Image (cartoon, rainbow, N blue to C red; front, side, top):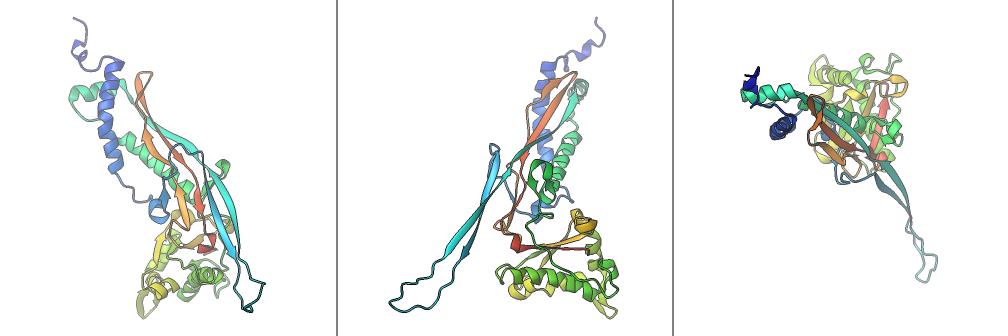
Length: 318
C-alpha cells in the first residue's frame, strides 16, 4: 500500500484543488463584503460614483459660468443686453489597480479533509487594502497618475485665519472664542465669496482638533463644549435649522502649508464633488501558481472631481 493513501481522495490534484477553491470562494467573498471598517470614511464624507463603468479610460466634466445683467431700455431700444455662457472641460484618467491573495494546495487538502471553511482573513486583508487605497486617492489623489484629491485640491480657496492673542496659530494655543472665530471665518467666507449662493453643511477637522473641540468647555461656568456650540451656532444652522456635520479626518494632519494641520468646510453634494470609483473590487477565478492558487482582485479608480470649488474652503495652521 502506498504511504498516506487515505489522502488520495481528499485533494490529490491541482484540478481537484481548483474545483474545491471555486466552491469555497462564494463563502469567502460573502464574508469579505459583510465586514465594515470603522476608519474607512470616504463613502460617508464624499459622494462616490461608479456610473462611468469598468470600461472607462477617463472621465470628463464641464464647469459652466454665465455672465449678463438685465437693464432698463426704451420701448424702441435696440441695445438689448446679452448673456454670455462660458465653460471649461476637465478630463481625469481612470487607473487600473490590483491586490490579491493565495492558498496553498496543502491548505485546501486540509480544509477539504476536515470539512471546514477556508480561512477568510486573507480575503478580508485584500478588501481592507483596497479600501485604504481608495480613501487615500479620494482625499490625497495621486500626482504620479494624474488623479486629483479632495483635501489638497488646487482649485479650492483658502480662508485667512488669524493667530490667537498669544501670537500663535494652532488651536492648542487658542481660546474657545478664537477657535470659534476660525470656524466662522471659514464658513462665512465661503458664503460671502460665492455671493450667498453656497452654504456649507460639513466641517472636517484633524483628529486632535476634533477631540479638543469636543472636550473643551466654552468657559468655566458653561458645560457646552466648543464642538457643541459650533454645531448649533453657525451660518448653516441659522439658515436651515439643521445641525452642521462635523467629523474628524486623519488625512488632515499635516495637509496644510508648511505641514500644518488643515480644516475643510464644504457642501456635501454630488453637484459639488464626486469621487469616481468606476469598478469596485472584483475577484477573478483562482489561478494555479506553483503548489497553490492565486486569487487576483482588480479594481479601477479615478480622482475626486470638484465641480464647484467655491462651495469648499480650506484653513491651515489650526
